Image (tube, rainbow, N blue to C red):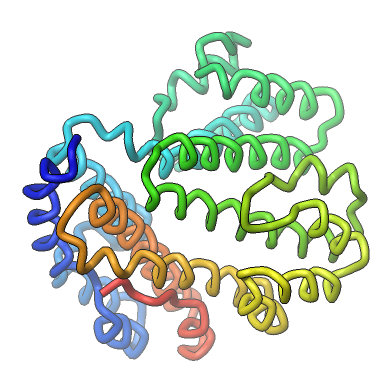
Length: 321
């Protein structure tokens, strides 16, 4: 689709942005006395569902976002870069369910590029040829590792790395600067979190080389070397990268760093609010909704579990609008 062909789609997105949750609305949520009050506030904003299980409400928001993109574009394959993580999460769930012969409720994610049933059947019946080519090898390897060794963590590492590689490859091949930026930030932030966790757990080089996904904005070899030295070395490594501000967040906690990563993404996409052309505003809207859903989940979970308001506030992400 040419740049000018996005004009109508962008105009529609501008009207949808008016319904995005603002910072002032999140203040209302945070100040609400209890979970039920939060649900009422969200319903007044058009968020349907809720009750005892907020996941229904959140999944409905995500589903409507993708229905909107299908309505505007018809073919949403240009946004598959946002969905590969869901595919590999579903693959991970299928592999683990196959081993344990049990399948917890709500273990699969609706939105993906591969139908959930295709993934389930491929794993259950060893029909990996039914999967997209790039998923076949990691799926087989993860299943083999889990069945032979019972090492669930290694299974996760194999599929998480495959997901990051898929996201990065899609971003690079898109030819779109916005999607390239998304892929770069996604992989770099995931690598940093992995390096910190590996340092804390005393993981060796083999683990790090398997888990860290190459990207342009980080030298993953240096990051692996730092992780082998310890968490402080990882922070020093970051000080010489474009993620140096994240080192301060790591001083606070890994949770604070994850929040910093999400906020960095929002800050980098916010200029799309003023862009009237191209794919950027649509892609930014998808990411804004995902960030919004994450923050709502944080608030509802905190309220449901009677956490202090300040504790919840520290985890809520910046808003797009």
